[in-house]
Every structure is written in C-alpha cells, then in structure tokens.
Length: 105
Image 1 (tube, rainbow, N blue to C red):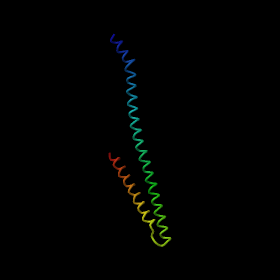
Image 2: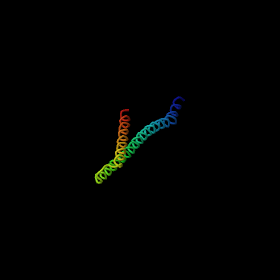
Image 3: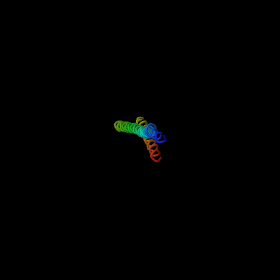
C-alpha cells in the first residue's frame, strides 16, 4: 500500500510539481532579463536624444559664428547658441553621471 502511494505520488503529483517549479524559475529569470533589457533600451534612447541635442546645438553655434564673421560683428544669435550649447553639454554630463551611478550599483 505504501509502495502504491509512493508510486502514485511520484507519477501523478511530483512530476507536474517539478515541471511547474522549473517553469516558474525560468519565467522569473526571463522577466529579470527583460527588465534589464528594457532599462538598457531606455538608456540607449536617452543617449541618442542627447547626442541629437548636442549636434543641433553645435550646428546652431557654428551657424551663429559664421553669421557673425560674415557681418563683422557678434549678434544675439551667438548668445542664444552658446546658451543652447551649454545646456546640451549639461544634459550630457547629467546623463553620464546617471549612467555612472547605475554602473556602480
């Protein structure tokens, strides 16, 4: 009778339970990987936006400088362009600090 019970337990209950535990562990691992990948994707998107911002600020500064050289005197465009460039550099520095703190943890 005990042997029948053990046989029943192993055949009918233990196998499905073991499979369920393995699948649960796999699902948990996969969720963790997905979360990490989502975080990496968000950081990548943020990095691209900052690069675009820096590129645009640099182009504006170049244009303002060219216009000032052409007219022979500095104008208000240069001050605005310098302000935009400094803001873009600060955004990049903030991103680098954020990324450094994430990597340190």
